[in-house]
Image (cartoon, rainbow, N blue to C red; front, side, top):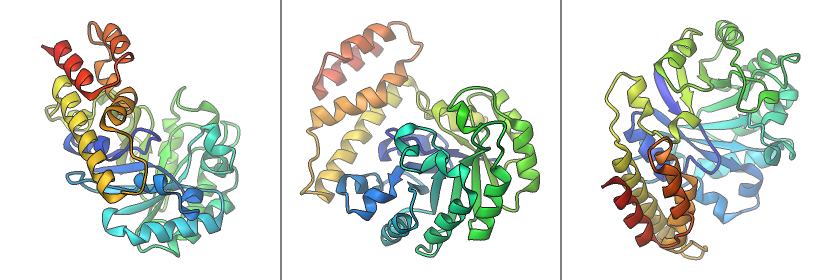
Length: 315
């Protein structure tokens, strides 16, 4: 069984991907990259496609709603294809800011459009093309088998299936029985996705016959979850995880400064503060005094204060 870090907007940046690779992930995915933004030459969007040393294999995920946008995006990814092992189309994100443009989970309603988008991507990249999607819009409208046909017809090499419907967002029960049917009927390798946090969760997902398992939210507070699910020791203590992650964040900022000298890159203090609120708070979940620590971190704005506060918490 292989374990992948799922693409998560605002979370699966290069430093976090590196944490997860060192924590046992076999493959990690970028944040969702807007095909429209790439097509219009948006530089900050390109930052999402940057990788850093020590990450391991990375797949790039794009989202878009028009063939022209995804074709141009694929061409842009092709220019930096040595960074990636796969190009994935998101047809599963249920967030309104994605679906209102016709992208993400909105595509589930139109498998023929998914075919056209995948075909446009495949025709503009030499990377293997895959699809990430869900079972359907809602339990009364199962679309996954039409989506599988679309993916195969377009020349995709695999599909990742979140075993929920769009209407469920990120909660509610998984339909593992339907996922088992998907695996049995799919002509493509299937990766299972959805609420795998424990060995019991893993056993239930693995019983469907999926080739690999994709983990998203379960990794946010513990990037060593991949090693644990493989039966190995977690390489990260909480303190080491926070300290290493902050180090990688600052290294990545320095990389961006050199790579994009004309772009606005936040100061080290501001960069660390933003990432602290996005990522590092989660490492303190369920620890004694965590609420008090988070309240204090909310009031500080410098890197030195962040480092001092964390060190004092763990001493």
